[in-house]
View 1: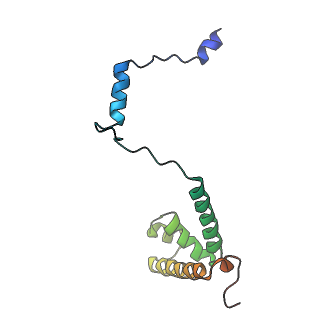
View 2: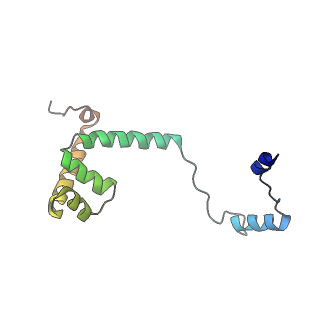
View 3: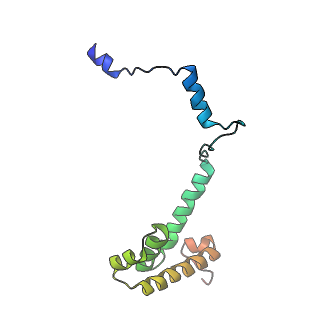
Length: 124
């Protein structure tokens, strides 16, 4: 019997006045939301985002290892340039050059289309 009481949760129903106050907090006088509720997630957009992340990872994996690390730490993880330089033992100007080279190669790869993701270039 003691065990059963421990699992039960007792609550008091809201009286009409408290319920009305709660509703007033959600809606403006004109009947519109005070603050819009968050948008519902769209399964299609989640799939597209996952596919984009997979494609980006494939492309970054084709970059030289250190260039890929610098690019991902700065652009994807939003780490500070000084922190990246300290971790990898490079100068800030070198990290800028590496990020530029990564962006150029990724843009060229995106322009080449799906064949680039599979390891082929248009010249092959």
